[in-house]
Length: 266
Image (tube, rainbow, N blue to C red; front, side, top):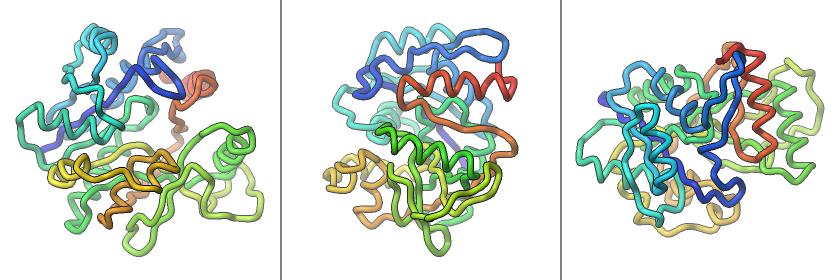
């Protein structure tokens, strides 16, 4: 299936303005911008036919072009990454079987997460979009719970039913477990990885739907699909020893840098 990867990036983030331009220092001491590291993650994916950065900001455009990225300009009216991907796809004027949204705040996304996602939506004709979920070990679950206790918006969790059809996504830690787990023990909680693979027709329909109450409350763009009764496939992926975290808050910079140091990512 022909695949387009779009990296949506905006400057005016409510929680973390100028986030795509923040420098992250790797294991060798080299500092690269968040958008550069997200681009590198996208370029490592096997089978992608085209990769573009979608932004509405000239500063992000200049940074992306400085390391050779292709940039598609989009409007400031885009409310989230999915809407920005939809506009970028329309602006390109080229047809693809799958459009992947590799959000610009997830530089630690392993290539196989995206490859498994593309394979998952290809193998399940009923799925209109697909998104990866990662089973939490005890240490990751403890980090998610601690973030909530401290009033920080950390990772998102997902619950799904038969055929791994998505039921709900939340910034709260769901489902409730009621007990502690050892750091390396598997838990019944799944961390949602902020990557999406859409069929183009559902991506184009998305921006025509009104924002619903659940999306408004949680601030999670994928809930618009759930609220409109669309079929979401949750693809379980394996960490294979890799740590994963998204850059949501300024405090996440040091956390991600520590992970890159431990994993030897330059």
